[in-house]
Image (cartoon, rainbow, N blue to C red; front, top):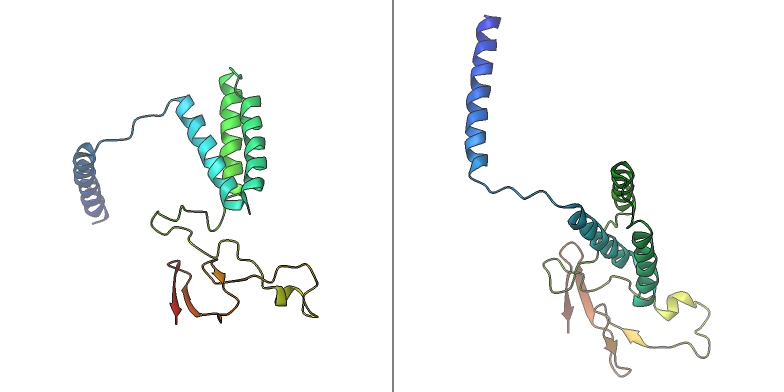
Length: 168
């Protein structure tokens, strides 16, 4: 009986394997990337990662220069073993520093439209009163200014889908 089941299981595996091979043959596989293409993609991923963590453009520019300098330091290596090690270490660093909510351009699906780095309200920062010289500017959740003569609007936020509705 056990031999019969073993025969049936091997028979199914071969048919499934052939069916899978036939289906896979219909699809075009991605070509193998050249080393230059891999490095360029890693550089772009590094910049996107820096952009996700940067609070403003100045921070991004400083960190991007550091990333560029690091890539420039390692661009003239010719030993395959050293190049493979550098690529592996770079992939590990990208994985280690992965942002939990990466920045997505606002016009892309699921884009980062608002609440990326929301500012604190001055009342929360200064509970004993706002000092002289501190901006008293009020902003809506979408980071637009609230005129002095208007009240805040009631805002409903769907953080999972990155949408909001203003109740007026």
